[in-house]
Image 1 (cartoon, rainbow, N blue to C red):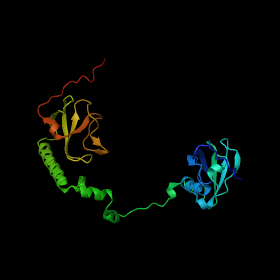
Image 2: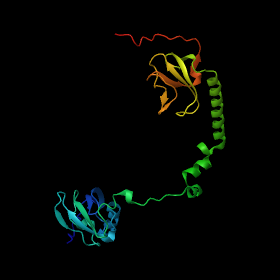
Image 3: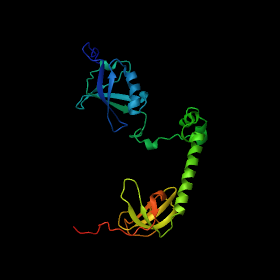
Image 4: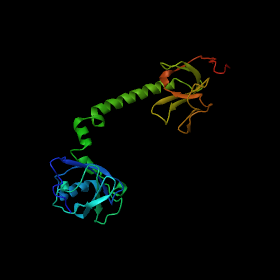
Length: 249
């Protein structure tokens, strides 16, 4: 049954309704023009519930979920039915799809492009970076960075070779108090690039026990070990100092 004339002069041009479906567990709040035909309305509902327009039956419910009537005339206007803000329109799917089929995205087949095909695309991010010579696609910049890294590594190696395991030292880092200890490790490490000096501090001022990420570089008590860059280590006659950490209050 269609209530002709329901779209009166005082009726707003759009109506706010909730959409439910036999295919989905959720409800969607939407605004639609009253001037849509039911056929046009069903096409818009395809994007909401996933059911084909040709396989939809529509039912109208009040805001307190009382059944009103079926919206069964594709040529009729949406506004010709007694639809007010807050009503619910329930979509019954006749396509044979299963409940939740359009909600589980893990079941959707993913398209994966091969690296070769992606390389050929002129509109990809990689193509843009190449044309713009940005980042790793700027050969001159990359060569400059590689040269700087090699120079830094060479300088670190020279500094590290001047430091011997067993030597007394003082660690001097800007913004931190000087800390004294004994050199326990000199060389390359797995946790970060470059050369590192492993120090066993005289007091528990460190960060570890001589190990990082499960690899033991030297042994000491917890909180007595640390790894610093060679440029922060000064080797010399540095006797132990009393930091007062064992004093009782």
